[in-house]
Length: 289
View 1 (cartoon, rainbow, N blue to C red):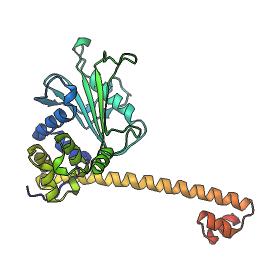
View 2 (cartoon, helix red, strand yellow):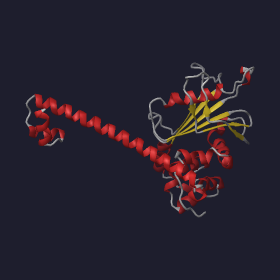
View 3 (cartoon, rainbow, N blue to C red):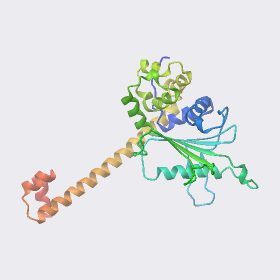
View 4 (cartoon, rainbow, N blue to C red):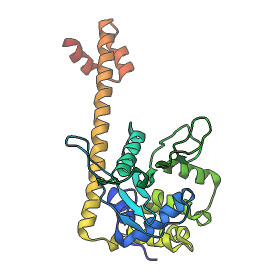
């Protein structure tokens, strides 16, 4: 394999290129069988891509879109999400998305007993559950007392990529020694940073991982796709810049408040300057106001 420029698979456009296209359907099937196969009665042979926009049932309700939404040959639906940044309410968002995918199966005249299971899978590039020791967690609806799974409509799987990365490094595992499921996670976390030797070591005998690398090799992308990829990077950088500036502004406001309180208590300008980092000139101006 001769690599040109391997793109970041966690980028929204790249992630959908790998797992959300007919061309690379075999990658998604392998990924699902590998990551959530233990939850299934049999392996997935085929999937059908569904409309990613989960329309509201009534006008004025919230509309949402997921990264990948598919239905397998047994009717089970899968919501697959790549989440690069943490935020309050992501767990509730997961429930919302899974619920929308579940109820959207029901057509007029349909029967409740015909509703199929929905599996929500989130790949998180942040520590979603800090208190959990394991990087992968699977959540079911169970009886509080007996832990019986009587309600089998929805389940949730979260993969904590930073925690996975830390565990691999602490364990001293070589890339070539990783199991296929681990290779998928390592690919998602490090694909764009690996040298050719690292790519070859990760691929090993697993040609499915080689196909995943080919899917995000820039040489195989159309120009408009690369523009869309760069737009996502720009939007993320802009959002980070805005957040950093908001934090800086809040910090400066806090420092100014402390300085004014110290001035009101007749502390020396030198003492206030040393404590807050503000210059004597800035403090004199503040005192004059």
